[in-house]
Image (cartoon, rainbow, N blue to C red; front, top):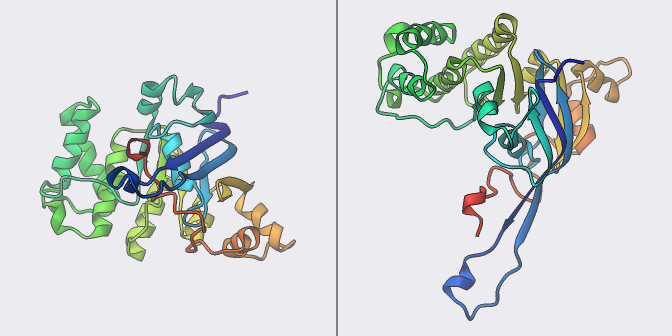
Length: 286
């Protein structure tokens, strides 16, 4: 059997944060630590070449799971493997195979897209002359005209900046691309261009994509399979058509209908526990 692009077995991630006030005012009664199980015994398998969707409301654990896949967090239990490489034991090998685009990408805003992307190319040890040519091609495929490539990023729209973030990820030709809400904030045309580029990337480069999204139509259009995560657990994993049959035997349902039925909430709702994007990273835990 072929090695899957991604294999997660019983992954668990727990955050525990302690209030800082007792340290500043020792006479005050210490509050108990807040414990959040962000990822709770998650198992999934993504085959090479798949576009795999992950749907969950705010606080469901999806962003924490993406961080586990991208080596930014270490699982407290279970394992995560990328093309057979354990993300903890073989971190550097995994980093060479993946790249990640988050909803809030960091840049040097005073620099241009070309300068930002050339900086990234140097970090990855890419040939600069080749990278310069690739940057023009990739940005052009994402709808950014060549004359805008040398403008400061701070003068560009949020949607334009997100396209540059996607270009930065694609510059390294990852075999596993992690897209964490990549089209959030984009106008309809830009969103469609990014979606088409993801499909073209899979077709041309045999890339595997894991996508989180708040856009049901986007997930339906792009994904071969979709997992629904709720309170840190995977509660469904099937093709879009298979998920729709959970609601209507004839399949005449929307993914929003499916999500509401399985979780009792919409994608814009927040879990009562906490938004996993707001849970502190390990370095910030007191």
